[in-house]
Length: 199
Image 1 (cartoon, rainbow, N blue to C red):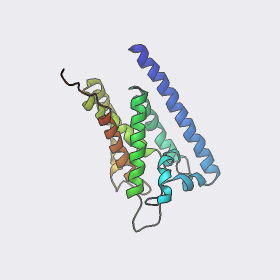
Image 2: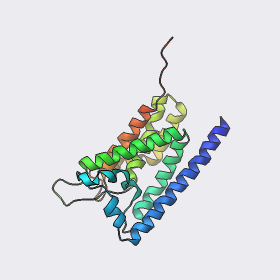
Image 3: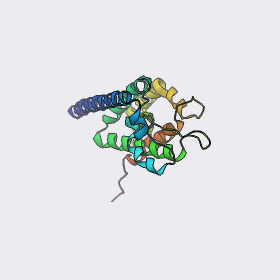
């Protein structure tokens, strides 16, 4: 059991370090090309040609400075590592459902119906999904340890949940946050232990 947890911890650290390195390499390329990657791979809401960008937009960040990516790095690494401790399947399911739910939500409801066309990029939808997954999975799993972790995470990071409000600030996609969070909750629900029927 301990060996298994230690192995998952090592794998989680390697995975999140690799993911972070990839995001920073992409950011260097994006800034060097003056935002070409953001314009090409960001989500343009309700544009049929932008549907594939649901799969790429979390990999790209604001090309004008490092603030966007730097702000996302720590919570992404922390939440990703903690989700990975439950195992690769749980981690991949939480990431995938958060990623897709966030992207689809932005594509359907992002931007302004009456304003200029917008492009949404960034990993914050995935971050909110992982956070949601970690907050609720203990209740579905009936695990006091996971519930205690959720309480600690809520105390430490609960303020980020304000990001689901439409009025938190300009340039912030609350749609990505709301739907990413929902994707994480769905992942926890999907991954909950199944009760065996009595023989």
